[in-house]
Structure formats: C-alpha cells, structure tokens
Length: 290
Ligand code: GDP
Image (tube, helix red, strand yellow):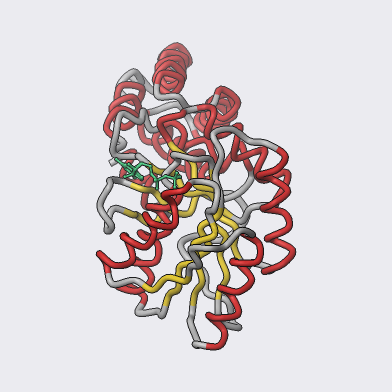
C-alpha cells in the first residue's frame, strides 16, 4: 500500500554517506523531496517536512541514524491533526455519525464497512440510515449491503426529505437502544450549495458526534481541496480515504490531515465489506520506514 513511498524514503536515507557531511544531507533531502512530490504528497506538506528533517538532523548531527530519527519525528507530527483516532463512542449512546462525501467517493460502501467493523470487532449495535435520496440506487444499495452482511438499516422508500429521514432514524435508534447510528447522506458530482445546505440542516437537526468526510484517494489533490470545503462548511471531525488499494500513489494519506487540520481516521482498502483499516499515525510511520 505504501510501497512506493517507502522505497522513496529508503532511497533518500541511502544518500547519506558520511558524518557531518552537508553535501550528502542536501542530496538526501533533494531525493526525499523528489520522491514525496512524485507520490502526490501536497507541496506545502513536503516543504514543511523537509525543513523539519533538515533542522533536526543538523541539530542532532548529520548521519544516517539521526536523519532517520528526524524523519520519523517529522512524519509523526505531520500525520497527527487535532482530534481522535479510530472510532470514538459517545458517553451517551447512540453515537451519531454523518457520512458525507461526493458521489462515487465510496460513501455508501464505507458506511456499510464501518457498520460491519463496529458490529464485528467492537460488538456494538449499529443502525445505518439511508438518507442519500439524491442517487436513486443509493437506498437500494445500502439495503443490499445490509442484507448481505447482516446489518441493520432504517429507510423509507417514499421519503422525500433527507433531513426528516435522518431525524427519524436517530429517534428510532434511541427507542431501540442502538449504540451507533451511521447516516449515509447525499453526494453530488461536485460541491454545490444545495448539497451543503442540506448537510448543514441535517447537522443542526441530528447534532452528530462525528462528521466523516469520505474522499476517493485516487482523486489526489482534489480529495484535499474538497475535504477543505466540507470542513469549512460543516466542521468535520475526520476524513476517511477510500480506494487505497488501487493506483493511489499514497501521498494523499500523508498530507490530508496536515492540510485540512482534521485527522485521517480510516482507510478503505478494497471493495469487500472487511476492507477498512483504522488509521493509526505511529503505526503507519513504522510501516513507511520499516
Ligand atoms: P458513493 O456514491 O460515494 O456512495 O459511492 P459507492 O459506495 O457506491 O462506491 C463507488 C464505487 O467505489 C463502488 O464500485 C465501490 O465498490 C467502490 N469502492 C468504495 N470503496 C472502495 C475501496 O476502498 N476500494 C475499492 N477498490 N473500491 C471501493
């Protein structure tokens, strides 16, 4: 998954030859920069990372071990944004989550994946609410995912108002003592006012504990830009990057938290229901540098 980036790091580390050798440090930093940009890491994140590594390596003394340590620290810092990691349960159930994102990002699939993860590994009672009324097939798709994987769903085929459905779904979850409610909201092909207004109204109506922005990692820098827009409007609590198994160059996962200011919480790594990974920065750093 992070193969290309890891290789880039190794190439950079191998450029450092001698102790106290500024020339080899420069070569290593140039190599690092080239590889990170090639892997689609946001240029501002690259700039900050390089600076941190340079300053720290010089402070500690130029050499392979110190360079590696500086890189590890800088990566850890870059990957951590204020907020939570993994899934956080509200002290007062149900934990209400709005799943947001553009059409095709993998939002509906991810809603089912998250429900499956919470049910299977956290032993929670989870309800999915079909509030994506924009795409005709979305309710049907969520129903099929629920059926195939033994998940609970709240839907109304005649529903016209997504906010109303979301509210009813949360009420239902409270009555039936669900631990978590995942609301699948409408996506559009592009961000528009109507979509945002509907989401803002829904946020006011259901007062979610979490708002996840689901982004397709294959869209590269666009994933970061749209996440920023959703964050400005909705004050999201985290990002989920999908399609990390595909041709993703990996850099988006390294820069999205740094650029948006909200943590990356999960990675979608395939089309199957179990293909969802909790994103834990320190663990990723050891995988990147291991
Ligand atoms: P939505 O419009 O955002 O609700 O998107 P969908 O959930 O319908 O997903 C769009 C397509 O992306 C579907 O074909 C999914 O199977 C696929 N998809 C979603 N997440 C992943 C992922 O992590 N990896 C891969 N390979 N495909 C994914």
